[in-house]
Length: 111
Image (cartoon, rainbow, N blue to C red; front, side):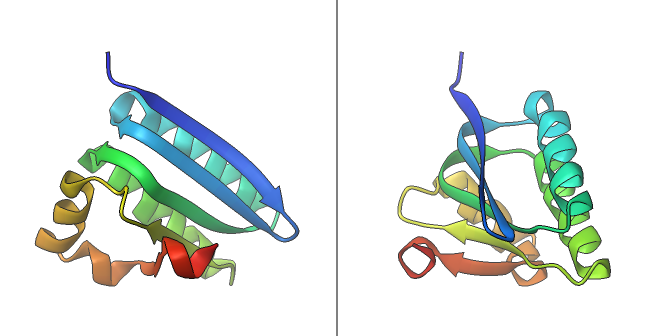
Protein backbone atom coordinates (compact mmCIF):
# COMPACT_ATOMS: atom_id res chain seq x y z
CA UNK A 1 0.00 0.00 0.00
CA UNK A 2 1.38 3.46 -0.90
CA UNK A 3 2.49 5.78 1.87
CA UNK A 4 0.23 8.72 2.62
CA UNK A 5 0.78 11.24 5.35
CA UNK A 6 -0.92 14.54 6.02
CA UNK A 7 0.43 16.90 8.67
CA UNK A 8 -0.61 20.34 9.84
CA UNK A 9 1.67 22.80 11.63
CA UNK A 10 0.41 26.24 12.62
CA UNK A 11 3.08 28.94 12.66
CA UNK A 12 1.63 32.29 13.72
CA UNK A 13 -1.05 33.29 11.23
CA UNK A 14 -0.05 30.60 8.71
CA UNK A 15 -0.65 26.87 8.56
CA UNK A 16 1.66 24.52 6.71
CA UNK A 17 -0.17 21.46 5.43
CA UNK A 18 2.32 18.78 4.45
CA UNK A 19 1.44 15.99 2.05
CA UNK A 20 3.92 13.11 1.90
CA UNK A 21 3.65 10.15 -0.43
CA UNK A 22 0.67 9.46 -2.68
CA UNK A 23 -2.69 11.19 -2.28
CA UNK A 24 -5.92 10.38 -4.05
CA UNK A 25 -9.64 10.42 -3.32
CA UNK A 26 -9.06 8.42 -0.13
CA UNK A 27 -7.17 11.30 1.49
CA UNK A 28 -8.89 14.15 -0.38
CA UNK A 29 -11.80 14.38 2.08
CA UNK A 30 -9.43 14.62 5.02
CA UNK A 31 -7.43 17.32 3.24
CA UNK A 32 -10.61 19.28 2.44
CA UNK A 33 -11.72 19.18 6.09
CA UNK A 34 -8.34 20.46 7.26
CA UNK A 35 -8.25 23.27 4.68
CA UNK A 36 -11.82 24.33 5.53
CA UNK A 37 -11.07 24.42 9.26
CA UNK A 38 -7.83 26.36 8.83
CA UNK A 39 -9.45 28.93 6.54
CA UNK A 40 -12.36 29.29 8.98
CA UNK A 41 -9.77 30.19 11.63
CA UNK A 42 -8.48 32.95 9.34
CA UNK A 43 -5.12 31.31 8.62
CA UNK A 44 -3.17 31.60 5.39
CA UNK A 45 -2.14 28.21 4.05
CA UNK A 46 1.00 26.76 2.51
CA UNK A 47 0.52 23.27 1.10
CA UNK A 48 3.90 21.59 1.15
CA UNK A 49 4.16 19.18 -1.78
CA UNK A 50 7.94 18.87 -1.55
CA UNK A 51 7.63 15.20 -0.51
CA UNK A 52 4.51 14.36 -2.50
CA UNK A 53 4.96 11.61 -5.06
CA UNK A 54 1.48 11.60 -6.61
CA UNK A 55 -1.86 13.43 -6.44
CA UNK A 56 -4.96 12.63 -8.44
CA UNK A 57 -7.58 14.98 -9.87
CA UNK A 58 -9.68 14.77 -6.70
CA UNK A 59 -6.85 16.20 -4.61
CA UNK A 60 -6.15 18.88 -7.22
CA UNK A 61 -9.84 19.83 -7.06
CA UNK A 62 -9.60 20.17 -3.27
CA UNK A 63 -6.51 22.36 -3.65
CA UNK A 64 -8.23 24.56 -6.23
CA UNK A 65 -11.31 24.94 -4.06
CA UNK A 66 -9.13 25.81 -1.06
CA UNK A 67 -7.23 28.38 -3.08
CA UNK A 68 -10.47 30.02 -4.23
CA UNK A 69 -11.88 30.10 -0.69
CA UNK A 70 -8.65 31.64 0.58
CA UNK A 71 -8.81 34.37 -2.07
CA UNK A 72 -12.41 35.25 -1.18
CA UNK A 73 -11.31 35.60 2.45
CA UNK A 74 -8.21 37.61 1.46
CA UNK A 75 -5.93 34.91 2.87
CA UNK A 76 -2.77 33.50 1.33
CA UNK A 77 -2.66 30.06 -0.28
CA UNK A 78 0.54 28.73 -1.82
CA UNK A 79 1.86 25.41 -3.06
CA UNK A 80 5.41 24.55 -2.07
CA UNK A 81 7.27 22.45 -4.64
CA UNK A 82 10.78 21.07 -4.40
CA UNK A 83 13.22 18.47 -5.65
CA UNK A 84 11.26 15.79 -3.80
CA UNK A 85 8.00 16.68 -5.54
CA UNK A 86 7.17 13.71 -7.72
CA UNK A 87 7.33 13.93 -11.49
CA UNK A 88 3.60 13.00 -11.75
CA UNK A 89 2.70 15.99 -9.56
CA UNK A 90 4.88 18.38 -11.58
CA UNK A 91 3.58 16.98 -14.84
CA UNK A 92 -0.08 17.26 -13.79
CA UNK A 93 0.37 20.92 -12.87
CA UNK A 94 2.19 21.67 -16.13
CA UNK A 95 0.10 19.71 -18.65
CA UNK A 96 -3.23 20.95 -17.30
CA UNK A 97 -2.02 24.54 -16.99
CA UNK A 98 -2.93 24.47 -13.31
CA UNK A 99 0.48 25.71 -12.21
CA UNK A 100 -0.66 29.20 -13.28
CA UNK A 101 -3.81 28.87 -11.13
CA UNK A 102 -1.79 28.63 -7.92
CA UNK A 103 0.80 30.74 -6.19
CA UNK A 104 3.83 28.41 -6.31
CA UNK A 105 7.03 28.78 -4.33
CA UNK A 106 10.13 26.66 -4.38
CA UNK A 107 10.97 24.77 -1.21
CA UNK A 108 14.34 26.42 -0.73
CA UNK A 109 12.74 29.90 -0.92
CA UNK A 110 9.97 28.85 1.47
CA UNK A 111 12.09 27.52 4.33
